[in-house]
Image (cartoon, rainbow, N blue to C red; front, side, top):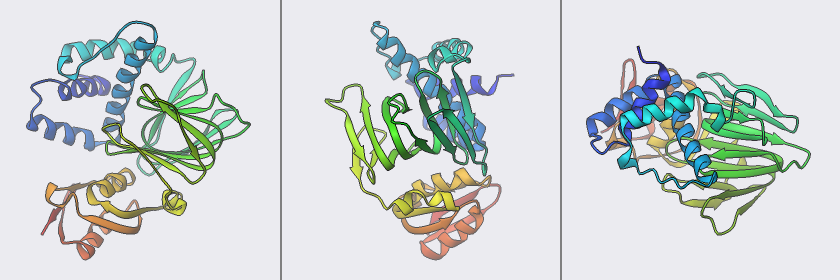
Length: 299
């Protein structure tokens, strides 16, 4: 029987195959959303593969991996090799660990003498030993850094944030990635940028799936609402709001395409998806169908 990470590697290969179909996409989505462990396994495989490309490129060898050229056998072989020595890339076991939380669980730990991390529900990070760097794989974290240590940082796919001192909130999902500076300063960079982007307290950097970067000044109470058991939405697409709510509940909500772009605003208590679905019926033109999962469709 295939292990969880072997199955995740299979799906990584399928999603990048030239004959990937809509039926494949539906089957993958169902598998990905079935359990947090499966979602985290896929995010880890993706992060390892991306890190291997970066590491290989930085070693002086030219690497150009085209998604259309990835094959199931090639990816499985490559990921298997990476998993056997995965922490040579992310890096070896003596220098790194993977920290993950289950749905409804939060965890606080010291990533280094100068970096403390609060890991939110259904979230995972790779903690590197040298330099003092985290790689956010999925979910949300708050990082507190002290001592003006320029070795502190967070990796987010191809992006790196230097966090010498201060407090920071970071969120990663398939829809967007964000870094909010609660106090202190941060420097965000990636390969190909003309110059690094400096961030000051109160600023948020949002990285979209197509690589676009935008800077705004959010309400900090909104960003940190999760610390008090709530999530804040401001004219947020329903698909994005549900993506966040699902990290806190074992009963998942599925939003049909017809309702995905409806917008909601306000503060909502998380961990109670059934109550949230009933509330949606009162504030939006939608109907909720309750079963093993909750399905939301537009009226």
